[in-house]
Length: 197
Image 1: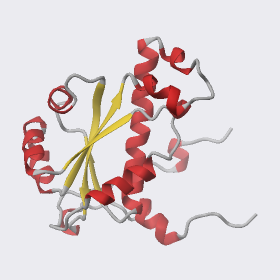
Image 2: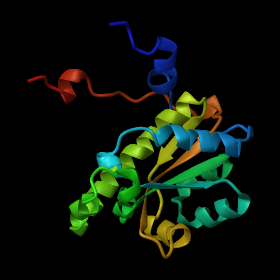
Image 3: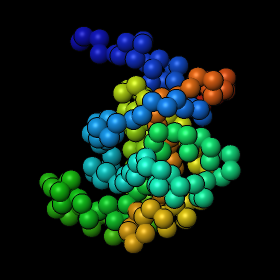
Image 4: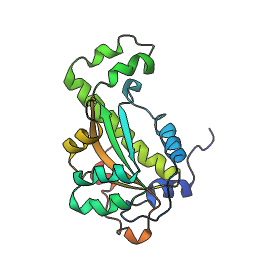
């Protein structure tokens, strides 16, 4: 079998040398790039192809001002400076789309009749899709600033009112200014976090 591993430069860009960004350049992020970003992340796996993530790309001045009061003080300046901030949410009624997304199992919506099962599935898989967003964004040359310092209930009221979507976390996107990057914090080693049985 041929070697299918990604090259070192790609691994560096996506994981090993990538950092969370807090300062941003003025370079814009085109709408077409956001479409491309979603078209990539949507292809990654979710349970029963449930695809519960619902994303609002906050880009306009008006949308940023709407998001601003939901943010913790320490996150306000960096979100306002970012070209785009994605609100990653998950649809608690994702199963309504399973006839389209998982057609070979017509009874799939019934698997999620229990609201707790539906909520757990939506949150787990929506979180996965949020992680895929970060990976896809970095692969496309964007920098990311994921964060959770905001009022979820207020974001849901302002951006998802009247829907079954709940916010999970937010992630600023753009071209980061290296001056805003902190030294990398330690990570757990394999032996601290893993075992092989």
